[in-house]
Image: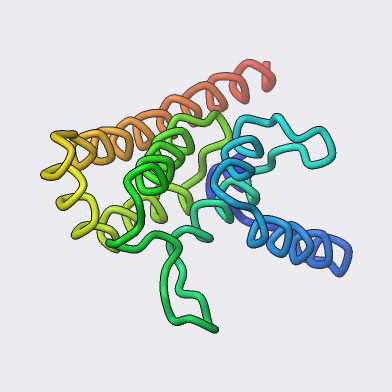
Length: 157
C-alpha cells in the first residue's frame, strides 16, 4: 500500500521499458494534451501514478537542447495560466504520491519569479493557490494512508 503512495516503481525490464515509453510520450505532449492525460481523457493512455509525476516533472526539468524550462517568463499569459492550472489539477488528483508533492514544491520554487510576475500583471493569486494546492495534497496523502491503514486492520480480523 505505502509503495503506491511513496511512488516506487517496481524493477524489471518490462516495467522499465513501459516507463521510458511513457516518459517519451509525455515529453512530446503540449499543455492541452497533458491536461487531457491527467484528466484520463486519452483512451490509449490511462493515467498512472508514474505518469502523473512525469507530467509535472516535464514542466520542471531543463530541456537539454535549449537549456530552458517548459514555461518561460516571456511566454504568453494563456500558456502560463494553463501550466499553473495543470499543476493545481495534479495536486488534487486521487493518484497523488510523495514524489508528486515534492515536484509541486519544486514547481513553486522554480517558477517563483514567473508566478509573481503573472500575479502582478493579471491581478491573480496563483502564488496562494499553488501553495494551498500543495498543502491540500499533503492532507490528501494523509487521508489515503489512514483509509488504507483502516482497511488493512479490518482485513486482519
